[in-house]
Image (cartoon, rainbow, N blue to C red; front, top):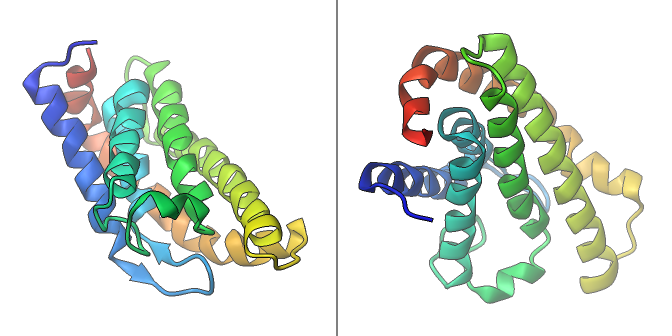
Length: 183
């Protein structure tokens, strides 16, 4: 696959923005609230499915090679971190958001918002599964799925709704211009 320099630059920019979003955070037990998901939403809405997912793959790759871009640092051992499932969910979430918005010639605010809702559901599902497996099988702490949802999803819903609204508003204003990069 060959990408023009402009496409590679914008894709890398969203990987870096996601990394910056990791350090703008509100601490919670186990899973901090960050601005990462805002940049996941924007990567999907503005770059489309392939490039949005690629930007998140690049972000995770940067962290796994040792760059301290995750909220808890970086390195290959981060795979065993309780929040790693959410990071993997970023890839799928960005792809789903992009896929949905690509189905429309001129997506509206409501299309972008619906796509972000679907992407968030994917991020939560993958992240919750990862957190559950980590707590029960890596950390050795028994946790039910309900408990994992109570501290790995519920505290973040309100903040993610605000981020979705912001991403949908921004994408509905500048999305048409940036979508041409994906073509």
